[in-house]
Amino acid sequence: MNADLQAPASPPSLATWFRIGLMSFGGPAAHISVIQQEICERQKLVDYDTYLRGLNFAVLLPGPEAVQLATYLGWRLEGTAGALKAGLGFILPGAALIILVTVMLIGGGEMPLVQAMFRGVQPVIVALVTVALFRLARSAVKDGVTAGLAVFALVVMSLFSGVFPIIILIAGALGAIMLPDGQAGYVMQEDESERPAAPWQTAYALAAGAVIWFTLMALCLAFLQFNPFVGLGLVISTAALSTFGGAYPAIAFVGDQAAHTWGWLSETQMIDGLVLAETIPGPLSLYSGYIGAMAAADLGTSQAVLAGALAICFTFLPSFTLVLAFAPYVDRLYAISLVRAALAGITAAVAGIIAKLALFLVFAVCLPENSPNWLNIMIAAAAGVLLLKERVPPLTLIAFGAVLGLLFMR
Image (cartoon, rainbow, N blue to C red):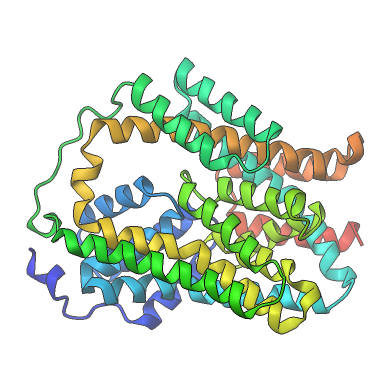
């Protein structure tokens, strides 16, 4: 192993990871870029090849890529303790903020100024999701098979509730069977630091994650009255373990379940949560913290905070578990052609799942009750063009939308 990676002279502190989390606005691509600039370029704690392998690993696993990349780099630098420090440091600032703001929204009643800002940002969110869909589809939908998988996912998600993991399994299986190996030129890099650890270490990580999950669920069942906590654990854990392709498919599934299956919040509140998740620093998957707090809004402030915290635990526990379990096998996993083909199929299906979210947002924000809202349509169209041309950062567009909401939507 490279000596400077094995025992870095000055590994990043928890404060460093906090700072990275607070600087991470604008979606997964921006988050990954911040991590690269801080850890790889400015502090030079890992080389670029190690960083890229970590990024490939993060994409290979279900869950939020930026969190998994940070956790993997922490593991490379300082082992399990470094992985926990990096991942938690990246998540906690945004987690605290989203729960705090959600509780303030719950306790603040109507709050017309805040609602006006949210209404102004909603069409910008439509543009963000639609542009993300366009970019993903452009790279993931390349032939008839991938197009069919995308349409299949869109139709099934529109017709049935709670089938997200089934779609992912079917798409992965069909991808492995029907798609050629799209990365035939991939060469596994032999690196002493990537040789597999003892099998018991992987088993220990998986067992520890399972024990923590069952403990959380048992606490919900044993010490809390009838409430949404157990449902939160089931819904969010399902999304966390079956979400490939970024946060939007998880948001689509969790938001749909929260609004339409469990009735924890309204469709408008579901969209407001996406606005909030796009606005605060940190991974978009922190959306689950908003869902959790809103689900327990009628139970009081302390229960709302607890529900938001539990939702975030259920969201990111699988990421920590999988990174710690499989980090020693990064190259060997990605070198398997069937794995890459299955991932190609899953990514195509994810495009269809995000398309369902995009269509819902378009109809809810731009065509409410099948009547065009021309102001929202114009804002969404202008934001979409600017995002496609990469002329304006997403956070600037969100701020601009909030100002328009205050001016014209009060």
